[in-house]
Length: 118
Image (cartoon, rainbow, N blue to C red; front, side):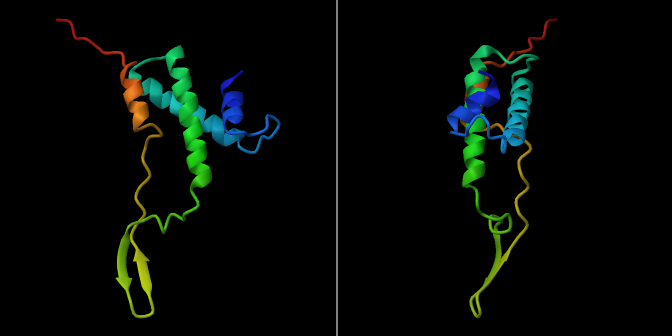
């Protein structure tokens, strides 16, 4: 079973439903590239395959659950009580990485260390 089929099975998307394929493929590819860069490797070790799949499942579930608008997820800039006015500041810049949290601790076990030799 390929990665995409595995992710779709885990999130209960029917195999013939291609609605989310582009997004899931992007997350699979981008997350794999970030994992390779973080671990200083050129190929993903078999031990990291489940972590990659699980992380993409988490991204999918987070994406499905996120119904808030970007403006309302920004920090509050000012509040006026008379006639109730709430002004939101700039939305926080999205992170440059898809990986983080517990995935980092898993990746740390697979980091290839560069040892300097004199």
